[in-house]
Length: 223
Image (cartoon, rainbow, N blue to C red):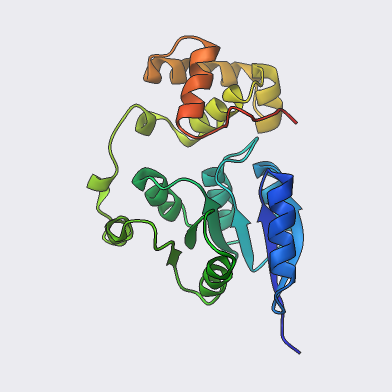
């Protein structure tokens, strides 16, 4: 009997989750053990089920994909991570691999390419969609930081980026504090630092910036 590899799907769009689940469960050696509609639940599912692979969208509500990758590799380092995304920029790709992901697949991939990417990552190899410039992967492997442009974005800490995402999704300071298990005063301090570093001074400006950076989408809805 073939041993089935356990997979958690993290995708905020229900119709895409259902399509991915249908595709993967039709493959004899793959089994979908859980689905997550946001980043926080993705981490919780990984901790609970300890899957062989996490299939992860980058633009997730409540906790972005980069934070999910880092938390997953800290809590369950043996779990492989294949990012499935629409983002093709060098900055995203480098950050994904530097955060610990094992593969990067574009959402316009064919069914056969996705299955191949999953199996390649599960076998211990890295995968990157052929549609992405080869020099990006080479730059990562050689740790050429010059490929990653410095900007105001780079000055933000991991926590500040998490808070910026939640602000962009419409959460108030108290709600953000509850999500992150910190005080409202701490959130206010981080928010002030974000505004100073980005030279943005209103919630609407922060939201627009979060959308521009791909942290949230214009259609995102609060849970």
